[in-house]
Length: 341
Image 1: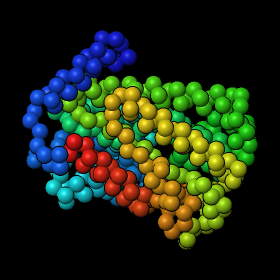
Image 2 (image 1 turned 120 degrees about the vertical axis):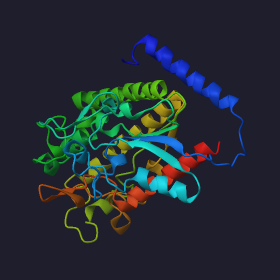
Image 3 (image 1 turned 180 degrees about the horizontal axis):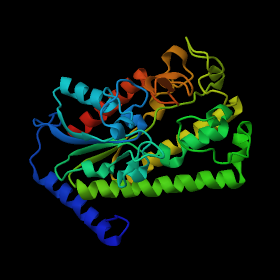
Image 4 (image 1 turned 180 degrees about the vertical axis):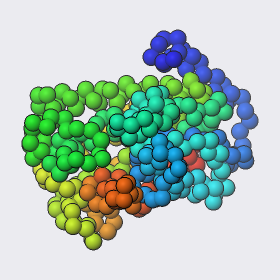
């Protein structure tokens, strides 16, 4: 079943309308009253929701799920506890966030390790008719942000577990800004953004179809590159690698522009679908990968907390514990705001 068909789109619209009518028919309490019963909630998303890089991970005895690198203490877990401390209880029906997930993996199974049979089901399978909140991050992998990073970094092009290939391996890494400014590079980037827009719309439709009473929430991404890119030319305390590896300083503003554009696309997609958006980009300007001891993002080649085959894996630009705590607080605040409406 695909919500790209007119019939299913009409069903999704009817489901949303029914959910709205049900909500209007239920007597409301005071404006600040939190729900007395636990709120059925599903968390979905990619490595930013799973909080790749933070150990220990969930499902250690299930190779397919373990390779999602979903942290036991990811931001969904922390947000749920923070809300519980304030008397707002979530009934977490599932957390299906998985590193490497594309938007399309919301409705298609995901291979969690290339070249293997390790797979996890489509994330939409976790949705139930009584789900009231659906929360998570999607979009960065579909855009191909890893491929953009590899286009700009010779070091990241070396064999690694970072998925994806450079957009054009024949174009030198130190010419990436020029590559994306015109011609095939610009056309590729624009087409990727079009794919993100279309697939986010599909994802929101599916959420509405399978969980018609749910408030849908899309969480943005934390900021990677600061305004002052000179800060990226010094390793963080205790580190030897530069935060952004060998990416040239003149390419750093381009990466920031891509991330800002993605943030705006995600925010608009949520608005178009009648969903909520949690903005992180503008709230993490002082916690980028280049902010030293205050960084909320692990450097591209900085060792993370997780291991594979006895080797520490790099952060690859994901939130560290400080960054995860910021995510958790912003998401908890948004959920509380939604439930108190």
